[in-house]
Length: 137
Image (cartoon, rainbow, N blue to C red; front, side, top):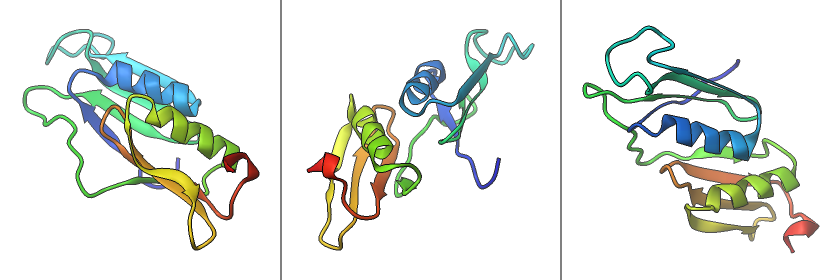
């Protein structure tokens, strides 16, 4: 794996969140509960480590009482040009389901297509590609 990979701490919703991201992005999903890891520092069913590896890579864990759960301000996860336009459009639509569209995925005055969405788990995504795609019209 190259480059930084976000390691997210969810408030007991890691299983749900990583399953959602797996449905959106595909890839290989692995999750290990605290029980699987022989840990006793929280509820046995909590996720001690989860990872999605594929076109989009994410790591996540359920926060415990000594960790802060996910709060993100002033950052976007950029998927600019990271896949074909049809795939990026599909991802944008899937992330929008239960989320909030900040800027619709549309052609911009400079000739590229992009948009922003905050998904149901609070991650802010910037998705786009160079040029326009006839499927968007």
